[in-house]
Length: 400
Ligand code: TRP
Image (cartoon, rainbow, N blue to C red; front, side, top):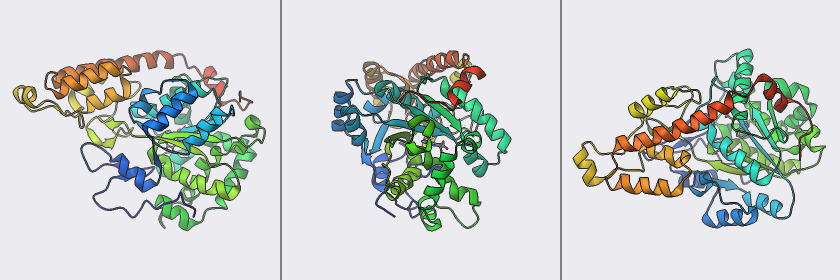
């Protein structure tokens, strides 16, 4: 296959593991993202690119971009060039609904996508891969669909604009959209079993649905999949996603060349760490490792106090002397994701590392920040009725 595709299976014992289904770091500071960039063959987002982004959009970069949480890309320049030339593109992202309520980690790509939608004023397509969860987990078709709708409400509450956002779940939409199936088939015809085996590590005992699934996540990256939106025009696509989704889009980019369609551009985020430490990402299947969007203030407080891994020292005396370690401290890491004020964050870092601020004090700031975020979010979520939701799912022309 072409240059984007690399194999993920041949990695050493002591290396971090990242694929769409498993993420494990080997160090307590978390995944080595620079190494991942090298292994995946993507590009690092450097200061120069951020400056160009700011110059062309006239907007200060989002804190998730400034702080290196969105850290890697493929062909982001192409998107900036298009915008500079006054041309439109579209955004595509998604979520595999695996639990009834989403957690804070799921918010990261969506928070950033909303900002991109505001900055560029472009159409956004959100795919809910309920089919993926049926294939990979012990979940029934009926239940996966229900989860997709619950998750859609969670996503809508982030504040996406209904005039240019289209949301669909695979189990209901694909059957209603012949262009989708036609593009799936075109994609399937470009990729051999050997290639998906190399990219995703599939084996002889994997069910056949898994082997074709990548074509379903790839299809929305081509504008011709949505004739009711793009009227068969070829429009370039930007996919904001967590880095674990990159294998799907390496494949998609290779296929694009063969289909003579534009390669989707990508912008990748790191993972929000689990409460217990940065070796793992926050996961819906472990409720003590995660803060859910429907947690109460009391639950948030208890979880952070009880489980958030601390970079503080064992005794107060030792802490005052040596200071805390923000490289491993989960409460601090959460503030990097959720505390927007740069000055405040810098002050906290200084004070904690010097030993002036104790772990308990840092945890309190993290609890207050996250509780505030979750409560604001819950107020918006309460307003997302079935009626509100259905508007986003309606097959219709959205503003391009
Ligand atoms: N596979 C993703 C998940 O399990 C869901 C998804 C579908 C997605 N399409 C996407 C994520 C595009 C990012 C971008 O969460």
